[in-house]
Amino acid sequence: MNYLNNIITIVQPENLQPDYPEGTLVLTDSQAVIDVCNNRNQPVAAFEHDDIHNLKCNHILIDVDDVDDEVFENIYRRCMDIPWDISETDRTFIREFSMPDLDDLFQLYSKSGMTKYMEPLFEYEEEKQYELNYIQYIYKLYGFGMWLVYDKISKDLIGRAGIEVRDTCLGENQAELGFCIASDRWGQGLGYEVCSEIVRLAREEYDLNSLIARCDPDNKASRRLLEKLGFEFICFQDDGDCRYRLGL
Image 1 (cartoon, rainbow, N blue to C red):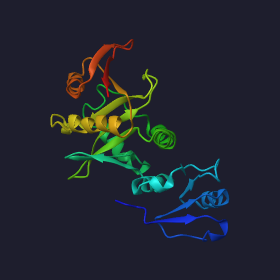
Image 2 (cartoon, rainbow, N blue to C red):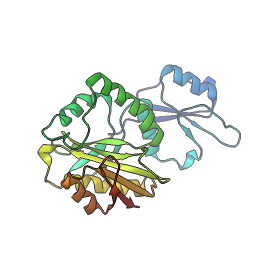
Image 3 (cartoon, rainbow, N blue to C red):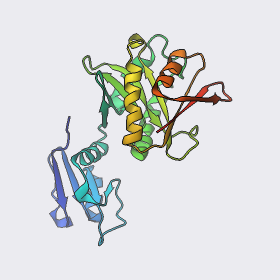
Image 4 (spheres, rainbow, N blue to C red):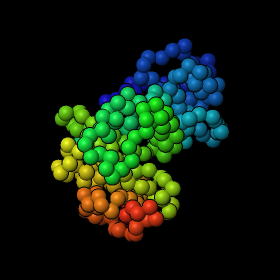
């Protein structure tokens, strides 16, 4: 779904209108316009050039003529707290978490066997704050993170998967792959389908050099999946987890 309907390019503050229709992104090289838009909660992006630089804006573009519609759409969504669509596979679509998804996330984690080999969510209010911070500081900083996986037909939340830069990452341009599939959908090849697409994104969209992954040594299904994806077993960590690595 596209939320952005119009881009208004404004050069002078006197051209700024009192309001704009929903779905409008203001594009400007004026700090005064940026400040007014921020005070109004109006989606805004700045563009810098030879005569204008050092603007203070959450979204700054340099070669604005080379920016495609998807970038503008994502800027608008970020300004409006609308989750980004990440990708899709034959049976699923993958997108960012948003706060209305919190109850569905708890329902996913409550399914039988889901937390046997991974940590459960925090208590509700603590998890709520954690997810708010995640949206603000992880998605906005890196442009990627842990995402939600939905069934294309039923539209149900059936998993969580993604890549994160964590303290377990040793090399530059390295991230850690994480994944879980709803226990009532195990054995259908969904983990491999989703993770294969995430590996592709890590390589082609995010220019990462390698991925790592960790899992409990008794989690044989996850270990088989990592090996099928091409991950190489590296070692047992001090906490007992298996560590795997995949060069991209």
